[in-house]
Length: 97
Image 1 (cartoon, rainbow, N blue to C red):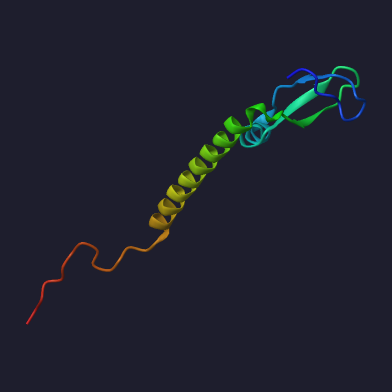
Image 2 (cartoon, rainbow, N blue to C red):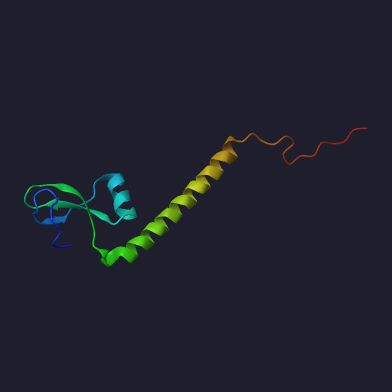
């Protein structure tokens, strides 16, 4: 997106590649993108324009839903593995008289 101004010096910026998982996650879940200044070398987050707001909102909702689904499935798996087996699980005791 051309025309983004550097918050430090007011120079023109260009998009910068994300570095690492944390930056990729922030980029995916918000409308902030990484930029670098041509003049002073500043690198940081700037909010994108409102033109992609609808797309970004949809992307955020889908990301949150997928995260909730994975977290729920993981929690159910952990509970299943950590819970002690029920007594006589699946077996009936023969009755003696």
